Length: 285
Image (cartoon, rainbow, N blue to C red; front, side, top):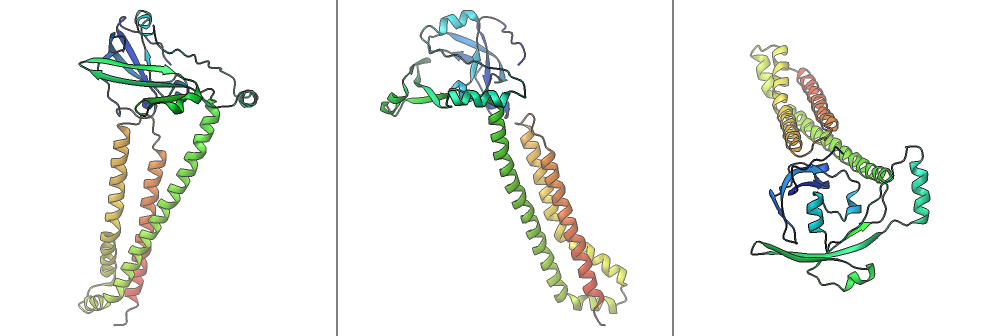
């Protein structure tokens, strides 16, 4: 996290965890109003790198000046987050030792309700014991936070989930490519049987076998290339769309999928054309 500098006492910096991955998905007004009546000017929107957002009630963080902080936190709920930076070798042992003493759980629920009437913001926010939350009103919003979180444990868990999802998605996608290619291949081979008489006529008219083979490859290209081009265009559009929102997406897998699509369709195209031409060459004139 870089050093933050406010232009003046009324300027604020908005830090949202949602922008860590996606950018351009959220829009914020340039003017902010607090319940206490204080107003501020939005200076900048940044990703929130202050730790896991589950430790922060899943809410964004607003960086304000000391003067503005004293005005808007007179009746506010305050909590503290402690971060421990450990080296790679001892982080797992430390987390296991702490986890034996302190169980990870949701705690310190906050109930809040805010409304805006006549350009004035009104409402309340209060912290309640865990056991009393069930008796609250339905129109009141509640939010909880985790008491403890390990960054590397969460990262490993997310990688396992994403890896499983990626494996299933790639398997289904490649299977769909082979099924589509097989269907197109069978369609062309069946049409070769019904079009034999046409090639017999061309042969009797003096058309060479080389010209007939070129025509077969040209005809099959009209069947296999359009789906391949559409798939490439679809991937290109998806990459362009994601690049507008994701700052560091890592497109290697996308390009790999596109390459697999091209290779699979080219293999089916060449194989189908070769078998098609062989079937035509074995016609007895």
